[in-house]
Image (cartoon, rainbow, N blue to C red; front, side, top):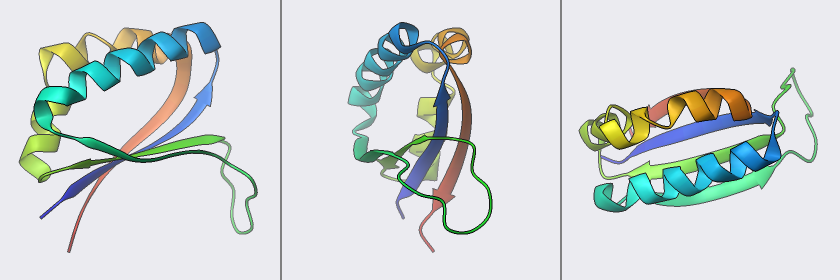
Length: 95
């Protein structure tokens, strides 16, 4: 079953964020992952959400998503990510 990464993002440095996004795109290629949706928050109608951007990335299954996240290529981007933005990353699996 498919596995999805949901990233909720508040960008702190646009230039660094763009560099990080390019690195992520490159890191996803060999995992055959697909960016399903990238968006900017338009309105919160219930609860609180301080993040203003979201991304949803689809992986073939949970094992593939975890292999990507733990890959040397992605792990090398984490320091850049943390300088560029405040990010909450959550994985969800089809059920």
